[in-house]
Structure formats: C-alpha cells, structure tokens
Picture 1 (cartoon, helix red, strand yellow):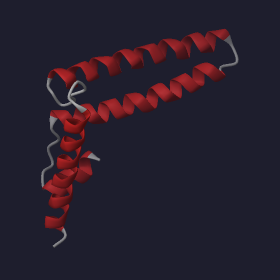
Picture 2 (cartoon, one colour; picture 1 turned 90 degrees about the horizontal axis):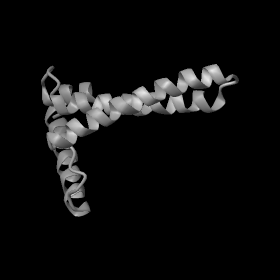
Picture 3 (cartoon, rainbow, N blue to C red; picture 1 turned 120 degrees about the vertical axis):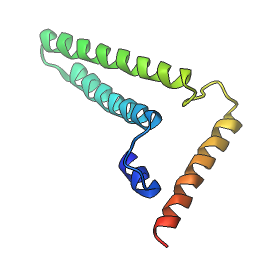
Length: 103
C-alpha cells in the first residue's frame, strides 16, 4: 500500500505513520500464522516454541499500537463519526491524488 501511495503522491519517502501501519499489518499476519501453528502443533515442545513467538509478536504489536496512539495516528477514543469522517477524508485524498496522475 505504501508504494502505491508513494507513486500516487510522487514521493519515494515513506512517512512514520505509513511505516507503523505496515508494521501493524505484518504483525497481525504473523500473529495469525503463529496462533495457527501453536494450535496445530503435534508436540508440546513445538507448541511452547510457537507460543513464545506468538507472545513476542503480540508484545511488538502492542508497542507499535501505543506509539501510533501517542502520535495520534490512531485515535481509538474519538467518536465513531469522527473516525469515519477522517477515514473518508484520507480515502478521498488518495483518490484525488490518483486522478491527478492518470489525467
């Protein structure tokens, strides 16, 4: 997603918010994979190993989430209407930038 946004906006530099979003998405995918591996492990040793990795991923995700909230990239305590409005605004900005490139 970041490279799409960078090409749409004509920049090769990713900002901190984009990097944090990518890290959170990656951590979510990794946590899902480790949870599945933990649940389907055939031996207690494998379960313990995957479970330890899952806990590390969850800790990293929590740290990046806390950073995103602190820097106000995520605003989980805003009213739902405000969150939706901000999402619509960001989406419209990306669409407008894309239209400028393809005209």
